[in-house]
Image (cartoon, rainbow, N blue to C red; front, side, top):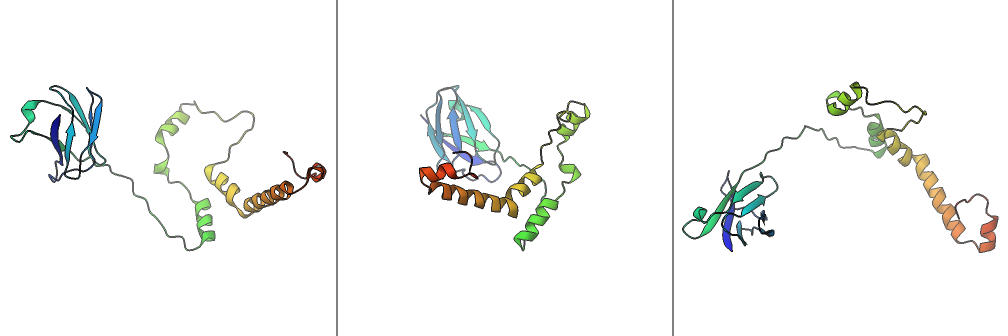
Length: 179
């Protein structure tokens, strides 16, 4: 068993909950709140370290890397990811939000360039049988507009009414299909 400590390279702070896996022996552990860990390892074993926000590390264990107290020190390097800018607006009314959401247009730079290249190389062909699939905004609108909500409510009421009928009355009901 070896004792170790995981710290951040930028601030030399101890890292909590770092995943440590001995790939050679198939053993795993987590670092405690002070960055300390204890794991079974032998000379030459490969240890895998991972933590959110830090680059993953593979370290070959060697007793030559132990300090005077017998502790194996590992530095983790920050992994920076830059995200695109997005603007978030507060919706004052639900009706206004629905209207803005349905009328929203995608910006040119948000299109998937790989798909555009795929289309340009003529691999994409429109369906020949006349089948047209609605876009995501159309699907959302058609499933959550007032008419769709009323239809769902009507279907629930019909089901509830049908469930409360006797078997003889159920046979007489014409509008209900499926039972």
